[in-house]
Image (cartoon, rainbow, N blue to C red):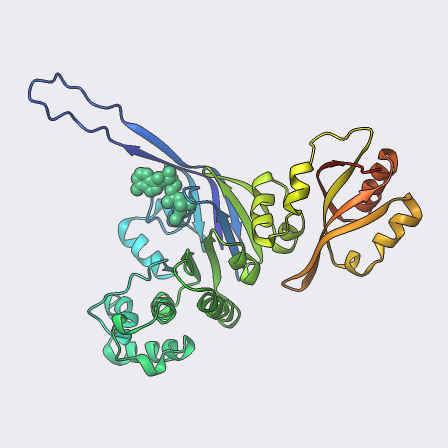
Length: 362
Ligand SMILES: Nc1ncnc2c1ncn2[C@@H]1O[C@H](COP(=O)(O)OP(=O)(O)O)[C@@H](O)[C@H]1O
Ligand SMILES: [Mg+2]
């Protein structure tokens, strides 16, 4: 439904001209910012795809390139079979009816009530008042706003404002919904209700959703697939279950660890050494999903590798239909046996990350 190929976007910041009367044309050199470089992304119809990254990574630029609010400097943007970069202004306007968008700060018109905000795109499309009403009322129902039709944005909570924005985005019956940090201004509970609404819409209307966020919780709650963006590049892409079990990049692991808040005790971190020694044992973070959760692997380690496991922290998370087990543990035993134990765990599909090594007390 959405396919980006080799999309790059460079911003040119023009240097400011000196205002001193006699200064010879001194200009600060113009700067360029490569906000996106060579982005490839495919979002199949009906799926919810998340793009996660730190602030300034290029997320907004990326999503704005999809409906050409930003024109890519290079590359191809296909939405619903149409090459967006080839369209004339009129065609682009038409195409945008098929692409709804919502924003962090809702972007409602404060002088219009709820009904009229949702009706706006339909008025611009030239629909008659009766046809508009027929379209708007079910959307207000769908978004839980039926009793708010005559209220103005200032009278609404953040969550309600975002519901209005969602209803408005759906008014032109889009096939794609773009969400730019749609829940970042909301508290956790309201975030949950908006995400549930987006998932409902995805399921009921078969709407394809591309959303960008800096929050793992958002990815975990509703996305099927996720891409990680860093300095304008997509550095990792995975099914959400895989990403939460075994992110492949350092940045991915940082996001995951931040989210899980599963860190070794501070006192232990201070004792961690990077390299193993003759008298050290490894501290590992284990992540396991699916079958491995129910397998008594830990007790088998003792039997098959002669290694004792001292569990420092453990928790279980549900990531969509999958169960994810997480554990921080010390593997106690001679170096050669603990190495075997790590191989053993990896061969049983556990994701093993060696956090460091601590001196043995004995
Ligand atoms: N209109 C613009 N003009 C110049 N630079 C911009 C513009 N929009 C974004 N940038 C720059 O591009 C980079 C990516 O920004 P953005 O896409 O907003 O990131 P994010 O949404 O991930 O925070 C940043 O360095 C930002 O300063
Ligand atoms: Mg942004």
